[in-house]
Image (cartoon, rainbow, N blue to C red; front, top):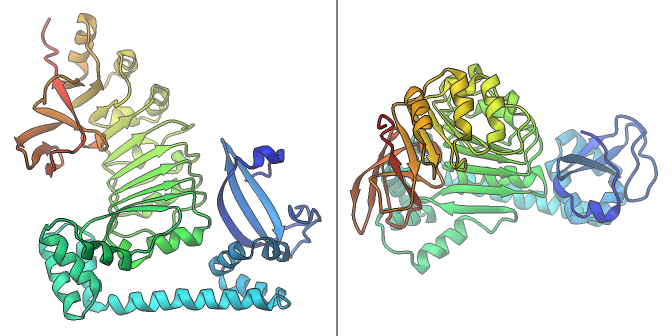
Length: 434
């Protein structure tokens, strides 16, 4: 972290990432509220922001921060370790009204946790542990539904309505509002009875993100996007399969703890070389990377999705490009990548390019690189497709197309979609043709 001084009009562009309570390690920092030094050993509030590619840290006396923004100060104290929180309450002895607000907020949070404990008894926890292996297991969800309904809990009613596949009703909307409050900086979509996806964008504090991810409705989240996050990942549900890190700092090193994670998307992160994972089978590489993980750190990765040409030299030097079996270039629409691929001396099971028509010389190169080269096109429905938002699934073959469903076979298995799903038709080239 580095302290960056900037004019006020530039500071307003900075995006707040974390606010935390800490002990001042020296007497060098200046309080941005009162413009005086913060003594060594004194409690201070550190506010970390991102401005373009720079990290900005500003510090405040604890009392100054409480007087300037009491609502944010309550969140800071609730997120602080117990020993720091106790010290802060002693230092704020003259702020009785504020401390009363902190106690009330802590009681409200404890009540919410207690309510969660009532919902998740031992039998429910056992079912959720099994569902973490496959959050869409209809048979297990049906058992969970019966168990929750027997106990008179509303989530059982929601699961029953969604398993019956009835159209959305006022009752379903009411149940979802009851089971998941509107949370600032968090966007979600529902699965069956639980949240399926969660996007956490620029949380006001780490406590907000932790609270969202530990909410009862988030127990079976499968997909998570962390946008503008600093530090290690907070605890995430054991069901997580897909993770996107955007403009994050210090999060990659903790990805290895996610035992069921299958796909990771990286863009504008500063520690990709720290990534280690024994579960990832696909990796997406976007813009803003100065380094990438070594091939040996991701032994099961089979598919690589490369969104920028600039990433190719990094991937080659790390041995990762040569390590995978499937390469997808969702935004690379000319033959510029072929020279880089050819120089590696490697081959791949599949190469997927968008809007690319190879000439005779390029066909010769492709014959050496892969037995299956596919390009995306727009003419006709196509018997092969690429899922627009899940390119890591690679080439899919359409098995069934009706007005009610689209059934596609990918290397990872058969998936069924609604007719409105966003897919791009692709054409498998006959690269052996002259």
